[in-house]
Length: 253
Ligand SMILES: [Zn+2]
Image 1 (tube, rainbow, N blue to C red):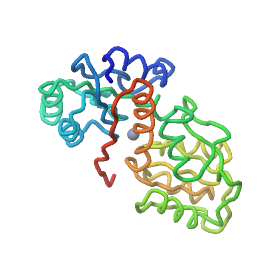
Image 2 (image 1 turned 30 degrees about the vertical axis):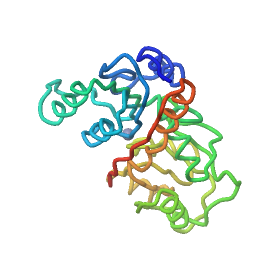
Image 3 (image 1 turned 135 degrees about the vertical axis):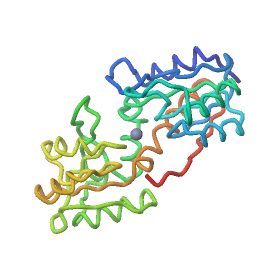
Image 4 (image 1 turned 90 degrees about the vertical axis):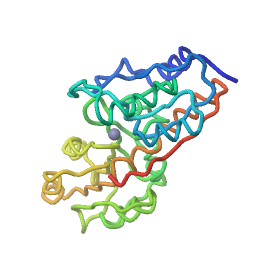
């Protein structure tokens, strides 16, 4: 079975609705490759390692969360950009990238899938463009304190986490936003969260966590965004009768 580049783009757009978002880079087809698609490789970031692995896997299209082009770049095709583009163009591989639309999708997106991975269920959304998810444990329970929640996240994602604040009090309302969403912490506190889970922490959030007695759990940018791309690519591949393979390029950050 195969489809066309055009129909694949339509399928991704129909599912993720990129026009609804103000984003930091272009969503959709970032690099044009061959017209006929049989196999999609999904991954978190369009790194050289992922592109090389996709070539090995004989992919016709790569689907990622972090594409190649972002606002604020100098626009020059030099260094790592030249290397990545050269590989894509030489092998005629399409690169599809969806950033915020992939975070936000209510069932298949990074936040929804991170929640699933951690046994959390969202009952509300918060923050800019409603990207943040707010809810609690899907079984209705809570966590005794931040250390217990941090242990749960560490086990769920199989990696160390950074934990600050709320060491003595129970946690019921949990907010989360995948990736580098430390800037959503204050909105999470305002929305009533006892704990906030995201990929990264910056210096100010440690103080907010202690002063507001709200736990901050940083579980890794990559680790928090490993689940959306394969979920979306698998669904679209099934819909169009394509092969799909998720390739995880490990990243400690
Ligand atoms: Zn990200």
